Length: 341
Length: 257
Image (cartoon, rainbow over the protein chains, first blue to last red):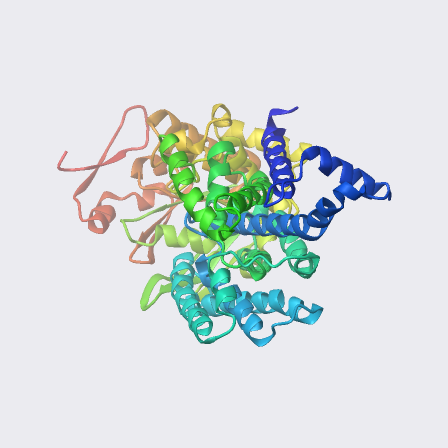
């Protein structure tokens, strides 16, 4: 094993462990032995033993789709978080900055209040509306921040924070006035709006796959961006075009992440920071590591959310903030130096 | 050849560069001097094509810089800006490799030829020993040498330097300036270099331009421009020319010393 590959092995192992825990743990525990038996029977096309049938139902219609949904969400949040931090060279940047997530949230809540359907059209409408909301917000922020031909990063962030506050308040208003859906809307706001089944997962794929694929190609460009936009230009990067590309890719990813799980804080912020502190700031590595690490971390948080108050579920967004914040602060203190950034 | 034609730059209401014209032939070093705020850095930025011009144009071998795409521009013009806010987690090598950006595709994978250019650039900038160190651990002078190496890795025929010796000790100042002079004379680079040190610039620049308030007040051989009377007026300090032994170039010193 080359030393350069070690971070990938470690994060991948962690992801594997998280995936395993996520399918096994819950109100009904599925032991690894049962898990293997069910999966191997299914793969070979054999009849699943009668004693294991209930486990199989739980596994295929509840645990697996939820696991995939959560993994996608974590990957998307952390991947776009890393990209935003790199693009804006700001350690506070995450999908919530620039109003991307709040715009996506507004879109998703609007779609939910208009259609209550679990049918395909209704399901696809949610990530589509989230993406529309995200892009529209980014476009507005971008226009507001523009000065002549250039778009200073500070302006972008400040405009983003303001627009974000604005859209969030519209979202809150919509939630308060939507009578029947209040619980669901509230759950959305705290990141506990996990819709079951495979349909939401499939509805997300057209957004998350191109978004992540695009993001993963931008490592070199983000490395150049670390020296500032002027030097990036002097090094031959078409700065304005690449900035748009990264924002679009990150918005797609964020929209997908927000659409069916709601507003989950902190993952997009802490995962890239943790990985940067551990293995340096090269974005060609940091982006894929964040994608893997984000999926692993959110899965672990989701497992926690199922067991801390079992049989009740705590919204995963609350867990990420409650467990994530102290953990992050501990890492920050332990680093005993200015955080590598 | 680098040509500046009627170059004007405006920030808000203020004209920072006023209708500046000059030519720098292949293989020549043009030194730029002037008091603080005169427009030296703005001139370097304007020549690199990263700020909008109020009027005029920059040409490289007759081609207007503004018409070149970002990549082609970086293959023609390399810049050593004043080093500040470098990302601390990068190693020297990683930073210099970014100089190859204009030759790479979007993914930025380097080939063996790129590695060779990076190594050569590190050698020429006396920065080979800094390759594995993190930028955050380096002194200002060490960062400055890496900035030069990164610009050299761009292999551009035009090299622009903005106060490249600021954080360097005497040994590296002379090393860097001699390296720049060699690049012009031996490799035919066209160099424009802003420098504070009036005596150093007289030794390493073939011609000197004096900028005051955004205007090119004088342009010519070091002997013409480094005139104590002219400079005293511009810098608001009484200056004198002090001869040094064995036919060396006289040095400029404040008379108060």
